[in-house]
Length: 104
DNA sequence: CCATTGACGAAGA
DNA sequence: TTCTTCGCCAATG
Image (cartoon, rainbow, N blue to C red; front, side, top):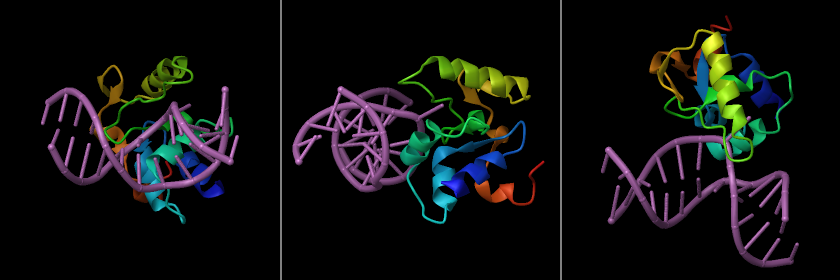
């Protein structure tokens, strides 16, 4: 999982990445669903709120619905634009590939 | 041990 | 466009 944690940690402030996109670039690719499962039990020092659905949707629900609001708040406080209450602007969405050069 | 269930997403109807 | 099915596979009951 170290590789996944590293990727998430390298997401710049004010940017978000999709679950499936992350799973796809791993050394051992996994489905977005598994990325989500991993994120639900990730280390507390990860910027987990910068991971969203493929179309920028805030998914976090099911077990702890309150997390969805927390995620939205954190993203908004980073300056991420929203096109809907629970969906970020496409411009904030980036591919894990673009994490290499940037790192902000 | 077996059935369900997800921080998902693509494909088919 | 909305709904269902299916692949993914570890965790949960």
